[in-house]
Length: 99
Image 1 (cartoon, rainbow, N blue to C red):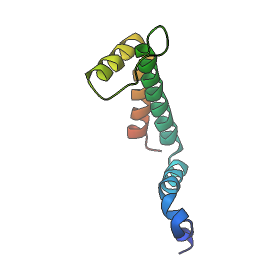
Image 2 (image 1 turned 90 degrees about the vertical axis):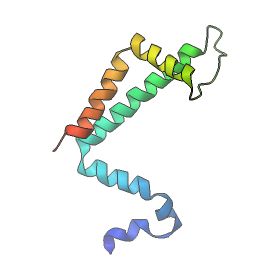
Image 3 (image 1 turned 60 degrees about the horizontal axis):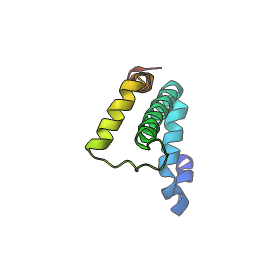
Image 4 (image 1 turned 180 degrees about the vertical axis):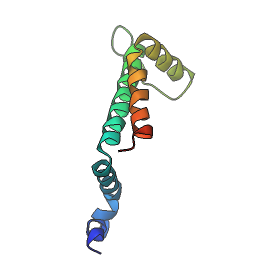
């Protein structure tokens, strides 16, 4: 039961996903890097789409999940194709790397 020690109590219950992710990242470092790269590229794409909808004065709207958001994300992806490509490469590393 020595391996279960971090999961004891309320703190262990709340931090259980962090412990699981840390164990997975320790066992699969290349896949973890791929996941971080994919999440980072996706976040950059979302921020870029948000900056696109902000308008010239910078006080634009916030993004909501609707057709405008989809259109803004698609426009940002077409304007900056490196973001979706890097996100797909990161996902491919997560899915296909077996090391």
